[in-house]
Every structure is written in structure tokens, then in C-alpha cells.
Image: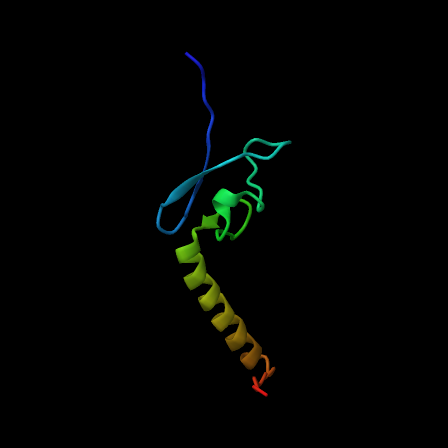
Length: 81
């Protein structure tokens, strides 16, 4: 019987997962170039979000950054030409 190792990347929000190929140096290191995790967001080295959860996270993060800038007195205006 052979031992088979698989690297699974699990979404920390919804629990969905994909099988990824490990890095060449570290088999447990997920490469951003791996097509299995394209669209996924690495929040930090240990936390990942699937593409559906990443979209909501990114929208909320951008909103919070705008609010923090406004509290600091930094105002930005968007103009379409």
C-alpha cells in the first residue's frame, strides 16, 4: 500500500476546497501560479478564501480603507472623463 500525499487548499469562510500541487521546495507551500487556486485569495500565509468569498472580502476591505482615509481627513474624488 502506498502513501499518497495531497495538498488541499480550504476556504476558511465556506469550507470549499481544491487540490493543489505543492511547491518544488516545500510540498505544503501553495504557489499563486497554480491554476487550481486561481481566483483564490491568500489573506495571509495560513488563511485562504475561495473566489466567491474573496469577492465579498475584497469589497468590504476596500470600503473599510475608504472609511479610514476619510477619518484621517484624506478625501478622494472619482471623476469620469
